[in-house]
Image (cartoon, rainbow, N blue to C red; front, top):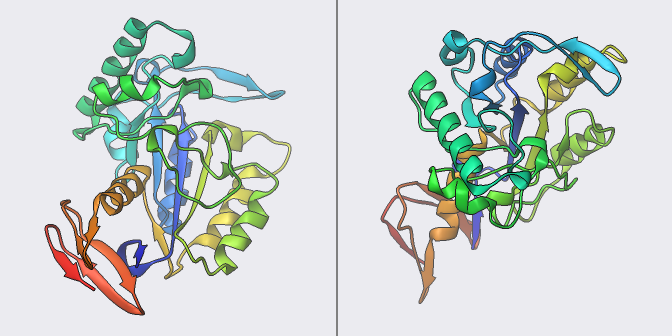
Length: 274
């Protein structure tokens, strides 16, 4: 028995971008152009803030998205939390962490009209108790900044490590391997970054990213998904119960799988016999 992604796909692609900066306007249009899905992790306390940032020896615009544009700017994409003021969870008290999380998720929910169930660790900071605070506010997953350079799925979605950063030199090779490979297990290519870094002028970073999108888009074997969609689907697959030659789907999601060369669509609440 082998679980597959929706519509019997074997691969999934997702992107994740932090901080909610003005370059997201161009980036969201680029993703829409290529039919790619992504998650944007925002700091609600900094929305509307204006000013440059010096990062890695480059000074680039760092104006934050305006509160009134959030709903339209990120329409069709997941909006997730990045803490209200970008607090590093590994360096603050439980009281501060809880306040940051509630403040951010409440503000973003009010702006988007949608539940906020995703998170990216500011500064990559977390510890073994981070998931407890996240679960309290309804967060289902959290992305770290630790790259795996692999395509495997996380064992624990509260410590979800991406494949690599959008400017890592190995991304081109990884993307080609992802396209050409025929996986025996489900594959996920997860790319993350900051859109302000795309304005750095050492090379044409925008064109470089668009080149990756040209290669990766429009593939029938790839599921283009937001972070939360992948988390929810895989969590549902893992919740299925197999016993005595039967597989039961106790979730509210349709599950796709194959068994001995035959394809199955397991509806919510359905049991299949093998």
